[in-house]
Image 1 (cartoon, one colour):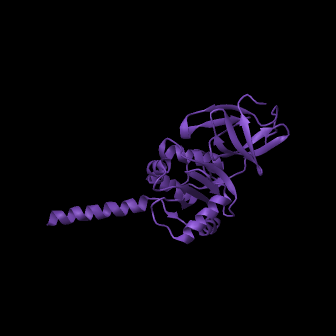
Image 2 (cartoon, rainbow, N blue to C red):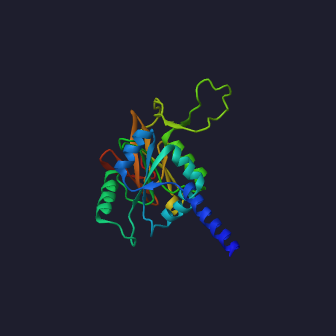
Image 3 (cartoon, rainbow, N blue to C red):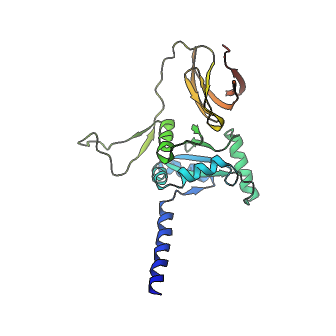
Length: 246
């Protein structure tokens, strides 16, 4: 009996440790934005089909459920799950709120990860990223231009602060050269992992990038990738670009 008590205690402690390590998710985007403002963080919106979308389930298992991601997220993000389940029960109010978010951020594929600031402005988008928490965290850092801050008067430049903090900085202005109209230069990958090269930018479905054109840059969102073409959204227009067209 004494041994069974120790075994039971060990199981309980393990469960508590797992809860401590896990990332904390909300389903209230407005509250998340307010919290992000107070804490100088970003909001990560995970548009998912938790009980049917295989890539969503894979992303959750490989990244979101891992303690490495939880540690990174606690320092930088307020996490919001925007779920569209087929079987799990969800209140009508939550369903309506999730549909409103999907429409507001033009989400039509899953998983879609949308990064916003405390005012709801979109800072970056991504989807499933292979390679576990390290690769996914690196992708978020790249999208947000995160730079690790070192406290002033630190003797050694390589020394890391006890608590890592991050700040988003806009990409520096670059003078565009030798780019004309939007041109689909290539399509690579297979299935859900297809990627297109438009002028100077590589995009996957659901991602948005600044693309260099003749007189500057335009925001381009990749909507759908086919075998020899891609649908993109530029401003309020949907455009089809085909390989070989100039």
